[in-house]
Image (cartoon, rainbow, N blue to C red; front, side, top):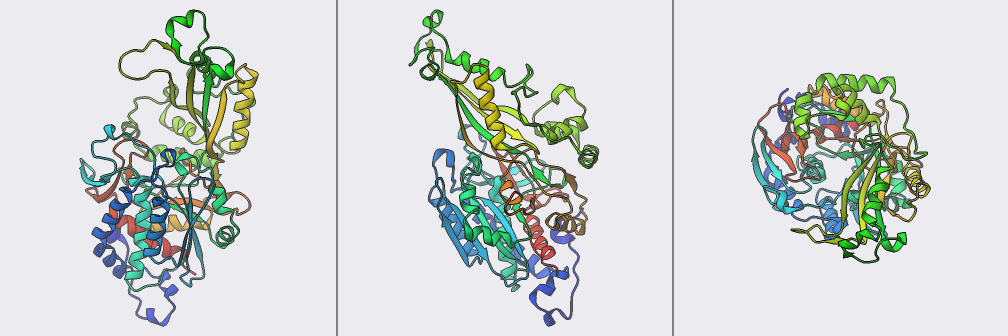
Length: 499
């Protein structure tokens, strides 16, 4: 596989000017746009760096209103005629439209927020957005939000810019919604999408796409047909609510006569899963749909093509659950709901010891959901289970979450992706659903019932962890750098714009 910016076949259409701009969509002549992408390379990378240096972190109330205001500026800068901040009961969203006079319209979902970070864990400061050489891979931008999702999103915007600067008309209209709370479970996305003007605009689209970096380090491209749902909850055990244990931290010697809220929480957590933590034991928990034969076939094909050892190395793990074979582990990844402890804290956690009996302990959980489960049903089952087993005093607060999402492979939005990849001599892996989550349900569910998915070439890694990066200059011809990522969106626009 060659670099995408050289891979795309060039067909010169002598009669091109006799047709509307949309006639260009049926040609493969992108030489002028490709030249413009190269011309704006440095400026585009700098725009991404500037964006990374302006973090919006909903959990820390950081970067507002600067985040949504900058999002509006970025959209206006590439030609969106209408781009406004949309207020919600939480962090603001953004609604924008670009009318290119095209017969078809593409919906787009952005997130402008990023995850929290601990600077001490990074080899390069997370808000410096430095260009760093990564051994065996190439030159990357390292910073919080580099791949999740500012890198792919900026590449998407740079594709629009390149088409315009090349003197062409965008072959599709765009309707874009952006939120600033994806990293806390999108609790107010509905207040943006369900606005009458936003919903009406989205209803006229062929589906909604979220830019992504879909290539692994080996160049393999995955097209996901959906994603798991999720709920994020915080469980708090306290002496005050329990009516047992202390109402404030007391000396640990008093454990001989006073109950511990920390142990109370730990025992409550142990009822949620089996002893190994791998099987959910919540009473009357919603059950997932069985894995279909079509899904098993997709997984089997992926298991043949993915390098298991490289996969383990990337995840810093040595074994799968129950020492399963790779294919069976992938089946679990796609099909199984999970109960995960994100964080567990109580009492003193500083240097040395501090002999206290804490009055409060907290656990942050995420529960991943698969079809046919719902966020509402999972939360209700969790609360009922705790109450039944004598832990009804434990406070359960859901900070965000949403249902799983699925789009059929036959959907035009997905078929256009496959067509673009195949034209670039890429044979993608078709994957039933991502094990991660994004709020695609708001588009695929009623009332919109649209197709939704991810698209974009390029590579990045480290989302939510230290040393997050997005590839700019690739050493591997199998993996796209910045220009190739931008060009992938160019070709996708033209594929979708075909009559």
